[in-house]
View 1 (tube, rainbow, N blue to C red):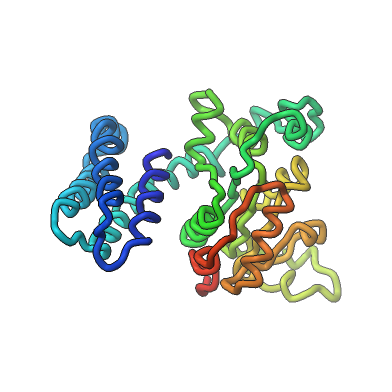
View 2: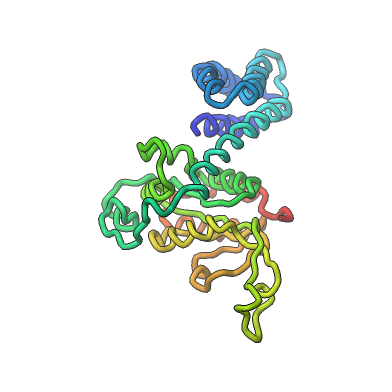
Length: 303
């Protein structure tokens, strides 16, 4: 969603300010967001998403605009307005993911891993196409806080996470199947990051257990959502050299094959650097100058 990208960029700009936003350039950016990015599409937004969501975005966008007219616009107030807007836009994007993600029918359009044309073989297509070396596709489950932290981290090292709604639109299909969207994601992204968060629980049924099963087979153990596991398998099958598995929290192991693709992510500088290096190895043009990328996002919260 372009509006979400715009407000996130504005958030980054404001966060660089002090207690009060004195920069004329920053004030102009806020004014531009309201006048040229929000107002022209506000009526369509209202028609598409309803009055309630519209009012929250409109009131907070207008409040930000009004604050720029004061002598000392409060950074805290502006960020509070932005947070309210992002919460609505994230909710809308989540609904798009639910509508076009795990609830898609897979049977009507079989996804073949044996396709060899460059159109359906992203790994080969990468050798013949000019791609955006900053584009990253993030596969994630229900933990949106971790998803947001990953998006923030990627942006902090000058990469551009692809929005699901953006990929749906780029397929050129009104109601695409998940295979269409994933094909587009694998071909457009330089790297694929699979966020494994413990959103579900699973265990091996008793009648199928052996004599000495590990604990994670006999007890309910946190695991990633099944659609995340499925899409991770697709990504590794299609783009093995560009797929990175980022495990956050305690996640049930499901394949030894995944090991070489995985990084156990936390808030330490070491793990952040490991992830950044893997992205660079996958072909991304990263920028790790400065220290902000070592602090942005939160991967250590209890899940």
